[in-house]
Every structure is written in C-alpha cells, then in structure tokens.
Image 1 (cartoon, rainbow, N blue to C red):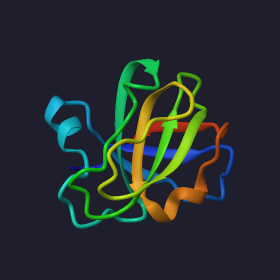
Image 2 (cartoon, one colour; image 1 turned 90 degrees about the vertical axis):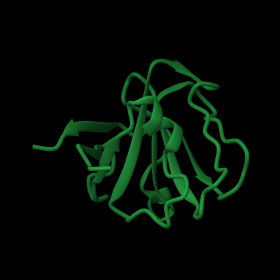
Image 3 (cartoon, rainbow, N blue to C red; image 1 turned 180 degrees about the vertical axis):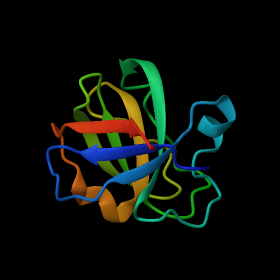
Image 4 (cartoon, rainbow, N blue to C red; image 1 turned 60 degrees about the vertical axis):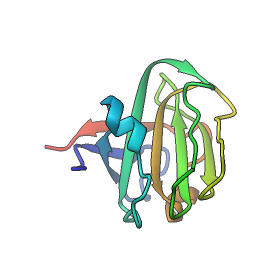
Length: 124
C-alpha cells in the first residue's frame, strides 16, 4: 500500500508525522495489516467511516504478527481514544465514538493522547 496521506498531531507538533495508506476499499479494510511482518515507525493505515460509532470502529488482531498503536479520531479531528493492540487478541473498540481509525507502529503509542487535534492531508 502506498502512502497517500500525511497525519500530523497539531497538539504535539514535535511528534513526527505519519504517512498513511488510505484503506477505503472493502478488501483493503478486510486485509488491514494482517499477515504483514512489520510496519515502519513512520507508516500507518487509515480506515474511514461516514458516521461515528464505537462498534463500527472496532478492530480485531487475528492473524497479526506484531502489536500496533491504534488511534481513533472523531468528526472534530480530535483523538477519541488510543490503545496498544496486542497481536492475536480478538477485539478492540474505542472508548468514545469515532469515524477514523489509524493503525501504526506500536512505538508511536505515546505520540497521541485523547483530545489531541490532528490533521489529515493528501501528500503532495
């Protein structure tokens, strides 16, 4: 997957940006990061839903070979929740409704906190 989006934490400008592949197709959403060996610390994938929800933003970690940081974002571009998702765990759901799910390297877990404002822009 080729990164097409730049994700910046506006609340923590010292944090390096993420470069994300947009997983908008059914198959891209279905596959996610399953069966990959790793994800680089600067890389991410992003899933978008038209409406905010806790259940629709839920993820599973089956067939994952590594832990990831998951950042859920609401319509106001504020972080709704952040969790460290462990490989092969069944289910993770945000504490608050979200419409955007970002999956990235577990080393980026501390770069985002609930309430942070983020920007998502196309890479030029």
